Length: 264
Image (cartoon, rainbow, N blue to C red):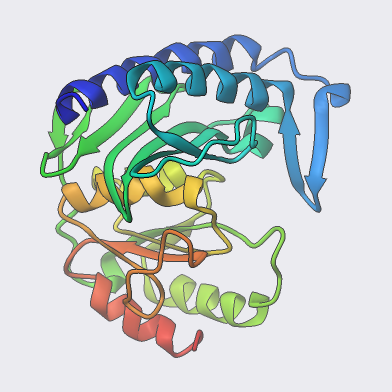
């Protein structure tokens, strides 16, 4: 495999190309273009076409790699390398003509994420990192915030829209955050949430019910920006465990203690 930095920069350019396609189609979506995958879970021809474009580019860069993709436009398992792709994170925002939405692309080597790219085309912002690198936003290094107290923290989360099994403790935790932090934002794109924590716009992010393609790229970018990523129990099962805590170093443990009161 070629140099990871070079590979990452190729993926950055690919994400921008596909992002231009997303923006070109943003105002063309009609009701007949929207398919329902599940309750409140939508997909359009734009998601599927964007994923095919991404897969085609990635296959040229690393032919031996397999894929884990949201829209399942390809079925290929790599022995060592696997791309994890969300072609359009924030589809509901997209079909309503709202920002943000993002492209999220990560490369997994065995069980470890070694490259991550998130492109938010509305602001033309690309966040990226590779193994042992700094994290970058449009070529400039980024770091997580230095906020040290939860009562000064601005948090991000996502509302359950498929799995309501933990809704009651989630809403109790949400109330705690409303009362004890600077505020909670729900942007509608987990990849963007993670990118914003990585660059210090948000101080932390928590959510359950997420898939690997929602968090793979952002988890690496945030860690390379100096943050900490875990599951709710401070373990490392955030990629496939469907729950994530992503905070700066000062706030991760304090918030983990809070969330432990609501989620066992």
